[in-house]
Structure formats: structure tokens, C-alpha cells
Image (cartoon, rainbow, N blue to C red; front, side):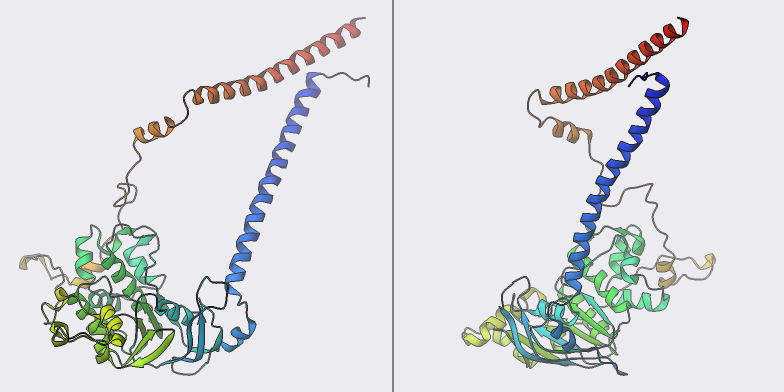
Length: 415
């Protein structure tokens, strides 16, 4: 068109097109993020919105003075199945304050699904679930957040020092905290990899107890505890003078001390939930030593709920002694266990790594790079160098073209 491609025009134009290219690439990335967000939002909506609006209306939230749980003629489906397969059918359940309810049954009978229906995670096919009050729920696999032990117990609530110390002692967590490097300020990962199964359960249990919710729903919280600690935890947490004495504890368990302390015992089998006596599920030493075979109806219950022989050793009470350092008389007043517990400081995360977390050694990266096909890295390096050379050559030839245009323009001006 008669114009000249000079350097004053070329390089500003290249910068302009470069900025436009970055903007267009950002639009593509934004579209990808938007699509991922829409999919995630739709999944959350499908999870929180009941598919059957009638079932949502039948799940009543009754507002009265005292908390209560009343289940009437409810039928539950098998979670994860698209068909109409029924797990529990036409059952009734009721729980009131100061009443410990224990649900027992064989593995896979639907105990966890029953608890999930109370918190709204599983929707009923038919019937009414009437809940009045706030709920604290701890699943069978404890949920531990990425924080300290204290953070997992408080779970965002303000610290009540006296009640916190009582919860720690009642759940037999005192000895575990004394063995940890930083006590209740020990950092835990999202899965709590540094803790054993029993310690995870004892961290989740005080979290539910400290929440002070009117309804406490626990899925087999005592399974990982030994017999002596289990009996003491039952007495201090679920007993008549325990921490949960004024609330509504609903627990799935086959623990004998818990069955003995329960006000109501329910048994799930063959898709039915029925109230039974605790003595029907507890195997006495005389029955366990006899050679007379049990009836077929009782055999499955005894296999599920029989206490191992090692757990019957030592039937006395188990007293947990808290750690107390030696304090000389001339050093001032004695320091209480509660003050020692609350005075612990969080560890310096920059100075040391969390327990169980190590740096990846260099030989691991070398081994990973060596897994490529023979000669593959040479091709990758060669292509990367060629790509950069092409970019440099493109700018170099543009520079030559602009210089030639400037020379021609200067010749025209001289003529």
C-alpha cells in the first residue's frame, strides 16, 4: 500500500500484538476455570438439594424447648445405588435427653447409613425424620483438619480452659498429649498420619464432646481403644456423671461397657431395626466357655459382639494419671496440670518439619528422569533449543527488514 515498515512501527506493533495474545490466552484459561467451577457448583447443588422434594418436606425440623430425635416408619436406600434397593425398611427410633442410645449389628447391616440419615447425608425413601436441636457428628473414620490437636478439638469454638481440660481427661487423651513433642499444639496433617487409630478416635471424640451440641452422633468411637481405657471413657463420657449426661448421645458400637451403660439398645439385622435388651447382645463368661452351640439366631450377634479374651483381663477401674513435673518447694507455687496444658506454645513450623514428612532426596528426581526412553531427553532439549532459536531468528530478520526499510527511506530523502 505504499507504506514503509520501519523499526519505529514494527517493534511497538509487536509489543501490542504480544499484549493482545496474552489477553486471549487468559480468556482461554478463564473459560476452563469457569467450566470447572460450574461443574463443582452443580455437584454441590445435587448433593444439598434433595431429589425428592416430598422427602425434604417430610424431614421436619421441630422447634421445641428440649432436643429430641424421632424417626417414624422410615425406609432407607442403599447409598450409591441408583435403583430402589432398600437397606433399612419401615423402622422407628426415638431418643430423648439424658438417654444413651446404642445401635449394634453385624458389619454391613446399615449402622453407619442409619446415622448418616440423621444428619441428612442419606435421604429416606419414605417416612419422617424429626430432629430438634443442633448436631455434632463424628464418622467412623475420624475427620482431622490440618492444624494442631487443640484446633481439631475446639473446631473453631472459643477456648474454655476448665471444660477443655475436663474433656481431655475424660477421653483419656492426657497420656497421649504427654507423649507428643508439643502436646496439644502438635501439628496434624489432613489425615492425621502421625497418630495411631486410637489416638485419632480420641481426638475426634473430645471434639464432639467439646462442641456442646444437644445431639451427639458417633459412629463406633471406641473401636480402637483397649478394654481398660474403653471402660473408663464410657464412665467419664457416656455415664450418668459423664460429660454427655444432659445431651442425646446416639452411638453405634459393640462395646460391652457401652451396651451395659445404654438406656436403649437397638439391633440392626436383615433390614430391620429393633429394640433389644443389652443382655441379649452381651456374652457372659459362662456362655463363652461352654461347648453347647448357640442357636442360629444368636450366632451372628455373638460373633459380632463377643469381647476378645484379652479384653476381659482386669475388670477393675482404670485411673488415668496426669503428668506432673517435679517442683521444688523453694521455687514458688506449684503449677497445675491445667496450666501446663494450656501454656504450651505452637511449634515453630519453619524450624522443623512435621513428624512423618521428609524432603525428597535428589536421587529420587534423578531416578524419575532416568525412566524416560533412551535418547528421549536429547530430543526434548534439541526441540527446546530450536524453539528459542526460531523466536530469536524471527526477531533478527524483522530487525534486518526494518533496517533495510530505514536505509531505503534515507536514500529517497537524499535524492
